[in-house]
Image (cartoon, rainbow, N blue to C red; front, side, top):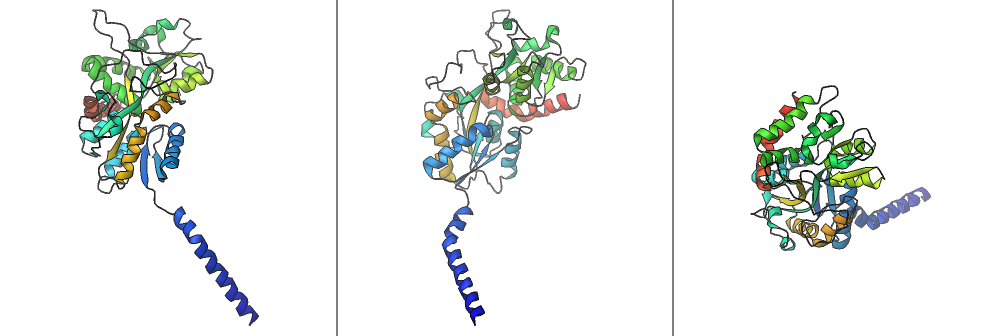
Length: 355
C-alpha cells in the first residue's frame, strides 16, 4: 500500500513538473522569427544581430558561410532552396553574387524607406537589393620590407620583376577577390584583364612564383603582416585587423594617378555589403524589419567604427579618420558586374585550377 502511495505521489510530482516546465520547453523549441544568411564575418555581424534581437524581441537564426566558400556557398543554398525557401534575408559582404541572384529571379523587391538617401549606384533599379557599408580593395604593404611605400601605387606593381616572389593575391574563386577579378574585365577590357590575371595564374607554380597565390584575403594580410611577403591584395577590413596588431603595415589605395596619356585614374574598387530578401521568404514582414534596421544610418556608423572598418556609402555618415573615403573609385556598373559573375567564375576556375 505504501509502495503504491509513493508511486502515485511520484507520478503526481512528475506531472506537475512537466506542466510547469512546458512553457519553457515550448520556448526552447520555438521556430525562429527570422532566418538570416550572413557572409559578413561572424565576429563582426553576430553582436549586431544580437542587438537586433534585443531591440525587436524577434528570434533570429543566423547561418554563416565558411572562409573557404565565401559567399558562394550561401548563394548556392538560396538557389537550391528556391522551391522550398528557408532564408528570409541574405546579408552578403559583397555585391556581385547578390546582383546575380536578382538577375536569376531569386529576389523579392523591397523599397526600404530607410534607404532613400543611399546613392543610386548602390541600389538596384528594381529595388531587389541595396548596398551599404563597403570595403575597398587595397594593397597591404609591409614597411620593413618596402622602406619606401611610394614605390607601390598600382595593381601592376605585382607583376614588376623587382617584386617577383614577394607579392600575393588570394585565389580569385570566391568572395571579394572573385568580384575584383570580374570587375577588372569591366574596368580594363577583356584583353588587359586577361593579361593581368593570366600572368598571375601562369606564374603561380614557378619558383619563385610571379605572384604568390594564397587561400584567402585573411591569409594574404597575415603573410604581409608577419613579414613573409612584402605586399598583396586584400580588403580594408583585413588590413584594419592586421594594423590593430601593431604590425608595420600601411594600406595603399592603388591606381590613383592619371594614365600615361592623361586618362582618368583607374581607381580603387569599392565593394559594398548588400542586403536582400529571397523570393518566397517565409517571414516577409520580419525580413523587411531586418532590412530597414541593417540599412539605417546608425548601422553604417556602427560598422565604420567597428573592427571591420566598413566605409559608409552615404557621404555624410560619421566615420573615424582611419576609414578613408577620399580616394578615386573604380568606375564600373555593379549591375553589369553581377550579370557577368557566373561567366567570370568559370573563367577563373579554368585559369587558376586547370593551369
